Length: 279
Image 1: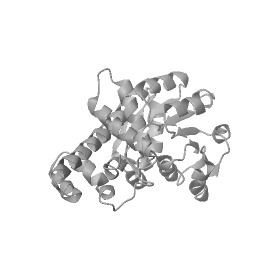
Image 2 (image 1 turned 180 degrees about the vertical axis):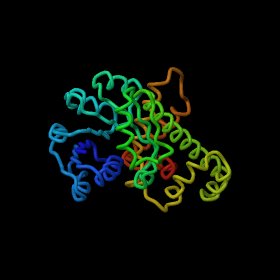
Image 3 (image 1 turned 120 degrees about the vertical axis):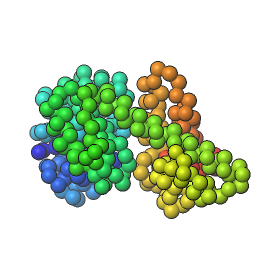
Image 4 (image 1 turned 135 degrees about the vertical axis):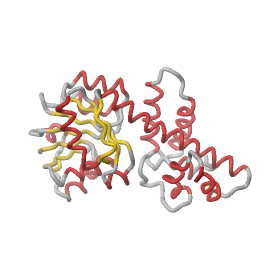
């Protein structure tokens, strides 16, 4: 198929790379240099979103957040009539309903996972639309980057959106948990590696295993996998969506904002651990 792919950041690049194997791909990114690796692999670079979608059979967006979708897609009336639009951007359920009301070919397909699973084709993907045919098409296109057991079709864009926010809530609050565990253990004079080993038999093991290499210095927070800015933005979408307070999410947001103030917003969110004693 002829596919237009808008937004070639860290995750967008990995998703688009899978499509190059079987599709004719035209890409656009606000910073053109970030699309260059895909161009070198066979994609065509467009100089504008309008040019990218011309003649496309399917349009995929992987932008930073709902405001970018409004600016680049909705306000620009970018999607041609009848062309399926698959949006992998993390947005709120309200925003997903807004976009579905504005463009009847909208399919929300946010991904769950980081860059490693994206490269391996092991992401979780929620694919949400009431249109059975478009859902089937979107699931077929997403197959190369999805774990076959985690490719989940749902009946609306909003349902897909809340699925993604639930997944990222787990990241935010368990990150806060590991940070507090480090503070607690260090209060008793324990070394961080000892604390991490102790967390192996706890409910925080998943986050500890994911971010342990950053904490021990084996990996650098630049460029990392999932930025402070991105997870902070997603956590604020959770607060906007919930009709009751989310105190654990609020605590995580405070940590992320501390890192943003220190200039670490574009670094991996494990910055909250790495720079925990520097604020």
